[in-house]
Every structure is written in structure tokens, then in C-alpha cells.
Length: 314
Length: 278
Image 1 (cartoon, chains in turn green, brown):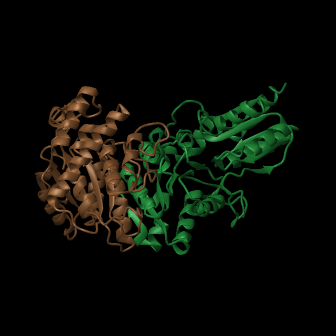
Image 2: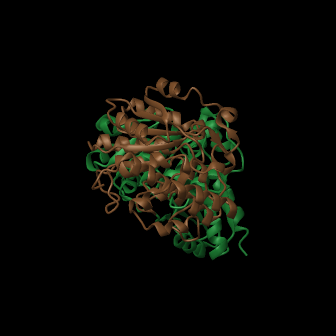
Image 3: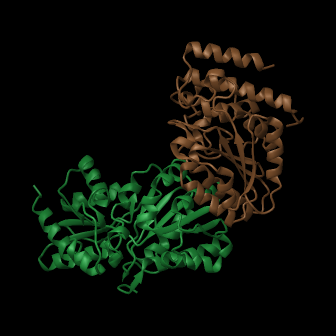
């Protein structure tokens, strides 16, 4: 039901449990956070294919690599900071370089981790993952899309990084939706400005479009659930249509979705671009909603950036 | 192998591979001869006697797996694969050159017989654990061999892997430490001490074989045989070796960790090795 609040990680867990039934090659790795990442849902139904690596993420990736070499489809999960950062070089050599079937799935990404503070708020992970050759990077917009993306990843041959938040937030997609890796989707048509978003910020961007509509501005919203390979056709098409592009992500404006979109447009169709995200800063403790306000990630912030960017049209 | 090679024949092959290492690294003008030479005798024992492998079918399902965690010793792995018939020996001369399959550090399945990519130290044992664990899960009876450098054991990830291997009872995993006691900056015990190494592995619940003389083929064969019979624990074999073994001026010389021969050194090394090869 649209608008219902659901946590992405719960649906990641449900999808893994489904894969336990349908794909005998799937193995799942945990680094002592199964209850939080929801890989525990897989552990319950397929304990013989669930591997507890302990608090040792680097080793977890290496072991996952060895199992992928041996024909398994390995899902390895922990919090985003550790999944992307602690074992980046292990992912580089043992997963991305040999192009192996290891899916690094990160939960608790972005500021909305909340009170745990800066050490646990992944705001750089998209940037450092998308720079790796062979790596696919996915940021689903809600719980239903997370479920579909998890099933799609199990079918996809090669390394991938998937990112999701911690909290429950409103769903946009229908239950049972399909996910196509590398395909962006226009989820609201508009003509004055394009808002290209990923993750929870897709919902925020829809709210921003409502705000803009009241002011007579027609905003197009694009769900860019795959950051890599980037759907450049969709970016160029929407930029051509509106002539101004705003990106929105719960991630640093350096290196993430905003950078990827700006790189694409600078090379193919120079267009005014405004980026919403954290601004070269760490987060801090606080409730998710408070942090999103303080760091400029609300619908009001996206709407303001849209107006600013429209004014840069020549 | 159709016929089983005896100890003398294995020793001869080890020396031939040493000559290959000198020739290919000299031709390349770079590479890591020291730690390749120290592992030559072990590689002869594994590739020409112990491992269940078939060069004509390099990835057959039930093959034993070999992971070169100390990936910089790629020359000795390539020499073993070429001498064993995985690819022509002449190809060894392409080591490290643009367009070659023989990358400076081994690349996953570029070369037939190479199982995984290695070179960034401290990761091979984790990967080997994954391969051994998959073997257990799928009820296959292959063994996974993993050659570790001693300096490499300073990387903490090895000890993460050591815990996991014991926790999952990976008795099909055999780690081998090339204990040549030298790393780039000098003696391992001065750079970052590793002793007492057998006790460290014992404390992690491993079956420890050795230390033995890593240049004594008979001792190596016996140790590998003992390792294969471990009931529930992973095994580590510690080989006391000499870095640069077989070439007088390279022996115990950290300077040849990552440097190839100049023309005079090359001539002397070839002369010394040819004198012991039949």
C-alpha cells in the first residue's frame, strides 16, 4: 500500500529468505549484526548456508570471495560504514578485480542512522564503491524496491554493492514490483526542473515536487536506483526536457549520485546542476528527522535547490 | 602424474623452476626472485607429486586448489604451471610485459591453473577458507593449499581467517608458511616479530606441522602427508627456508626481495643453477 512505512532491511531479509528456497547456491555472510541487517531471516530458514564471520569484515569479504570462486552467490552484510570502508581494498582485490559473484549489502547508511553518530553514518560509500571497476551500485528507493533488487542481484552475474537506510519510511513502489539493474524511472512527470534522487530521498523529492507545484513550478522526479551502471540516457532525456537538474541523496555531494549525474551532463549536455546531500562534513548524534533538517536534506531544501537551479538556466 | 616422481627428480624440477625464475625476472627487468626461490622445493612437491590436478583440465571439479597468498612470488607459480604443462614454458619470458597473461601478481583465471587474484598481502588465507568451506558445504573432498609469506603474517586479516578456519573445522585447508625470515626492510624479527610462530597457530586451535627444513623434499612430502590426515583442524606447515635459495649471492639477502639480476649477476646465477640441474 503506497504511503505505508516500512524498513528496507526487513524486505532485504524477506528476499533472502525467498532466495533460500529458490536458489541453492545462495550463501549469506554476517559480521555479528544479523539482527540489524535482517540476514537473520535467511539464517532461520537456511542455517547451513549462513556463515557467521564474527566481527571481522575484511575476512568476511575474503571468505565470500572464495565461496564465489567455488560457484556460490555470496551476500555479505553489515553496516554501510564497515561494508564499504573497512574492507574496501578486500572488495577491490578479491571481488571487483576477479569480477566475482559477491553482493555486498549495506544497511544503516546515511544520516538517518541517528543517535549512533558520525562513526556509524555512511556518507561516502556510494563514492568509494562506484569508483571500482566491475562494480554495480544500487540504492533502492523503498522496501518493495529493495526486495525486487535483492532478487535481481542474485540473478546478476558479478560484484554489486547495495545500500539502504535504517529507518522505516513510506513506500512508493507496489509490492511485487520488478527491478531492472541500470534502468532509471520517471516517477513524476514535470517540465521546469528534474529532481534525480536515490534511496529515501526519492520520497523526499516527491514531497519537494508537491511544494514546488503549489508555487507553480512543475518538477519531474526520477528514481535513479542504479548509480552504476548509470542510466545516462534517462539523465540526458530529462535534462533536455526541463533544462535544470537537481540531485538528492543521503550521502556526501562529493562522489555520489550528484557527482555521477554532473559528470554525465558536463560531458554530454551541459545543464545547470544543483546537488542536495551532506556538504563535505561528518554527521553527529541526533534523531533522524533532526539530522535531516540540520544537514539540509528535507523536502524544503530540495525545493529551494530546485528554484536556485532553475534561476541558472540561460 | 602417470608415474610418481622420486625425491631426486622432484629436487631437479625445483632447480629447473629456480632457473625459470631467474630467467623470467631478468628478462622482465623486475619481479620478486628471493621469495620465489625459497618456495621452489615446496612447489615441486605440490605440483609434481601431491596435488590432484590435471593441466589438460585445469578447473576440473575435484581438483586440489592452490592459493598463492604471497602473490609477489608469482614467478615460482608460473614456473610450476609451465613446467607442469599448463602453458608453454616459452611464455614465461612474457612476465610483466604489456599484454601478457603473466601479470606481476597472479590474476584470476587469466592463466590456466591460477585460482584467484592475489598480491595484496594478508588476503589469501581468507579466500582459501572460502574455497575450503564451499568444499565442505558441497561434500567434495578436494584440499585447499595456501602458501603464506612470513612477513605477510603481520597482516591482521590472517588471524581473522585463522579463527574462522578453526571455528568451521576446515581440516581440508592446509596453510604453508614460507619462513625465510626476511622482508623488504630486513629480518622479520626486527621489523615486526612473529616468533613464536608455531605457538601462535596452536593457540588459534590449528594442527601445526614443523617447523621443518623447507628445502628438504622428503621432509616436505612427509609434512604434506601428515597435514592431509588432520581430523578436524586446519593444518599449518611451517617451512624454515632461505630467501634466494639456490643462488649464492641471493641467499639471505633482502636486497633481492623485489629486484632482478643485472647481466653479471644473471650469468653467475645461471651458471650456479645449471651446475645442479641434470
